[in-house]
Length: 127
Image 1 (cartoon, one colour):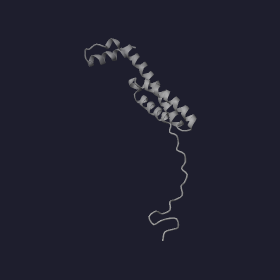
Image 2 (cartoon, rainbow, N blue to C red):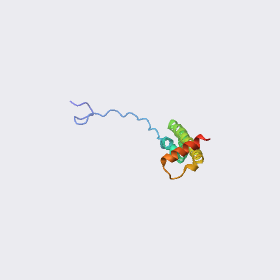
Image 3 (tube, helix red, strand yellow):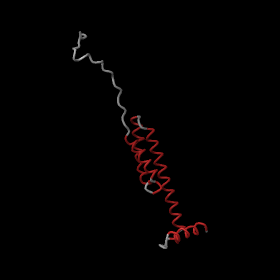
Image 4 (cartoon, rainbow, N blue to C red):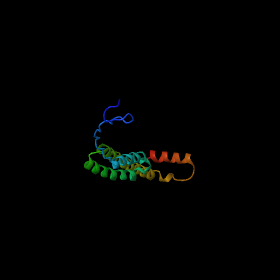
């Protein structure tokens, strides 16, 4: 025999438990981490600088959102640090590339790779 208030086909439903409010996602924080990581991996090709700058801007928005909502602060800080590293490495790569080009400019002749390598060795060891 079914319990009072139920039928054989529909047993009594369990009492509803209150669900906690869903955390507000901090999408700019996730974007900042992704842009920072992408910028870091591409920083040696000098593409990471602009990508890192975009990550810095996005991390700023993410930190402001984290302050307002209370979520995503760790990701925002990680995105900020990764983006800062990407910009720094891109600037360093540009400086090193410029230095290398300045010290080996007399070697830029289409004579062959072996002659180019020898010219670069001589140019860099003379200084």
